[in-house]
Amino acid sequence: MSRLRRLMNGVPGRSRTLLVLSLALVAIGGLVASGAVGATATVLDPDSKDAKNGVSEEAYRQPAPEPGDPYFEAAADDGSWISYENPRDEYRSPYLGDGSGKICVTLVNENGNPVVGTSVPNTSVTIPTDGATTWHPDADPMTVTFPMTDHYEFPLDGDEFGTSPDIAQGDGYMDSHCIEMHGNPIGSSVEYGKAEINGKYADRIDVAGYIQQTPAGDGWNSDLDPVADAESYEQAGGGWTTTQNSTHGGAVVVLQLDAPADERIESGSSNTSEKGGVDSTEPKDGSSDTTGGTGTGADGGDGGDGGDAMPGFGALAAVISLSIAVLARYR
Image 1 (cartoon, rainbow, N blue to C red):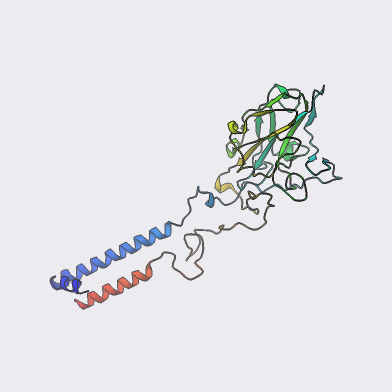
Image 2: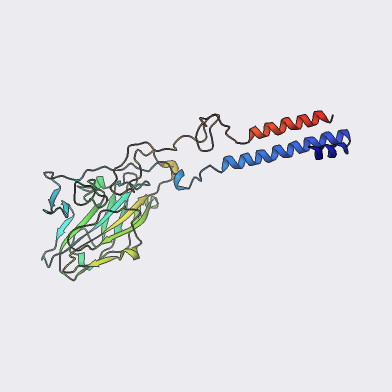
């Protein structure tokens, strides 16, 4: 303060007053600026993942058929596999061998939960297939039209993802729509092309990727997340060849909805990326209005501890008080 005193002693009275006021205004301006930066730093980018609240349609929860249900087919005695009836399952005639497989489509919402496409009506996905499947009435190409509940007898006929201690494969909830083929000779190949999305809401569906497996025996590894484990078309392989030791193969085309943020609904389910997880009914956090009434913080909270919406005004008050005191001292 002694340096400030010497500075003030060399300044005429009127100029001294103006100098003090200028210093105070500079201090106030600096604090307001820093407070504004502190407030806006926590505002989420509307395009960021954390800011995207809601989904374009809720998860479709269809329990897998159990023994005695019309769509339950069979299960291995040793518990290595389980199979469900598929209305689009075909056997080649003439039956030329034990080569079999499936091509599936999994549609998930923005949270990664299986849906049937009620939010994207009059839209379809087409997957080209090769000559080895021309005998299949639903192949060459394979087409799935949304919503699946309006177009298919058994909308979701496969449980391709997740795990459960109670069943051999899957988590007990259907998640895919498939075509199945049986009767191809050993050594034959099944190929598929890149998914093509067409129709009214084609721009709201992204191709998340492909998951292809050719396991030895009949078991399918379902301990996967449809979005996180999906690969590019080139990485997945685009097809498989049956062998004596690996007669079964399959591929899942994973699609994900991406509706405009202002056209989504609040989701009652959490992300199911956790392997084997079952949808949570807990409401999503962070859904409060960030533009609401007085005292609302930048993160949408109301500052329950009584803190200021913009930080720094305690220091600001101190500077103002100090400026007034200095001004009074040198009047």
